[in-house]
Image (cartoon, rainbow, N blue to C red; front, side, top):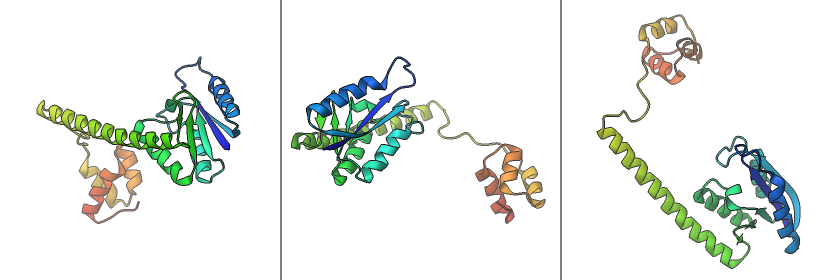
Length: 197
């Protein structure tokens, strides 16, 4: 079977080497008679999707069915959370792209692996509900203590905005000059009846 290998090391830990992960992945593939057709390597934290170019490329290539499975050394090398893992693996399941983790022996090409996927999906939903409850409780407690929830109110010079609108300046120029968002300026523009974007 044609597999893709994915390795990721965190930029926070300079002593890590992706080759350590790739050796274990190659050994597993050889033992199980799979061909690795491409190796993707990122140097970034799990949550930093902007720096994980190779992971995004792997996702694109999986959607194009350029391989039949993905191998990682450990689950946390690929996924940010249980929910992220479940969503990704579910989309791969629809594409008939398998997944294997060397360390955890997680393999969606087997019936047991697919059962594990469904169990993990349930755990992901439970995790989201717990997080949501904690956030709501934290916000309610902060509100009781008198803390403002959400963005602070922006103080703006309405008269100056009005004058700039009358001079025909664009929303972008006004926002830049006053160091406020375009949305703040746009609200005032709507009241005044228009300006250029």
